[in-house]
Length: 323
Image 1 (cartoon, helix red, strand yellow):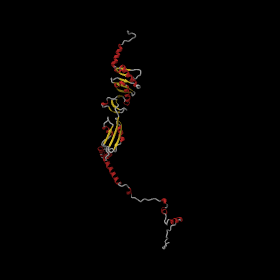
Image 2 (cartoon, rainbow, N blue to C red):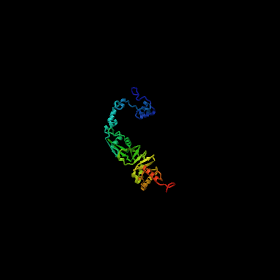
Image 3 (tube, rainbow, N blue to C red):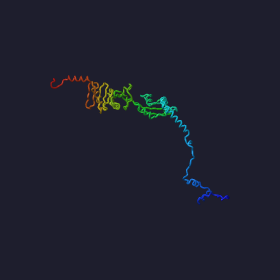
């Protein structure tokens, strides 16, 4: 005790070991011990953050942004109900395209390469490109698919060159033949794809095929023309019959009926008949080569009558006939 009757040390009991430890530490109580006395055990201690007002935890300018968004929605709805948005789109295009153009990402230049039979305006129309679109929001895959749906276009590649150029490279289908079906004429590619209606005289010298499905088998017809050798210049058209065999129309109007199989061999027989007998110069409407061991011809009406008269006048040997 001091002179006033007070103890010089707190009246807290410590275990014997703790007293020694306290003395060793200069009489200071260990921090962990103090925390244990206040909160129980050190493992149950929780850190408490200082309270922050809710307005301080919200993003800055959130209220202004929400207010602006609300009024924008109201104005947009009013414009839509009044038909003003449709008018804006007609005049300036979709809003996102208009915005992109405003920041310098418009479509100012389109470079098209690989075209010879189709015009630039046709390409632009097929792709849906005009001054109201922007480069930023163009989908190159969608543009490619649109272009490849054009019959004349076999393949297309589309690239963006920022800030404002689009590059289109096309591979065209080549006109391969003219196809007549149901009375209409079409220009077709080598794979049978219809390119266009036959409206141009520049295609008049193309091979001519007739009949349902003949467009898809035009390569077979061209192979037959080549097999005709010296007679190929006299073949004007090929008609596919029942989807199985060809009948050739010659330049003199004569029909040459070919078999379903072995058509090239039949044409070789025709070449031989023309060389030996000039069969294409006779009064014949049709030559049937479908049987390998014989040739059947159909005469013109005049030739048939003349042949009938000749047979009547020809003397016959036998009973009752003078010899």
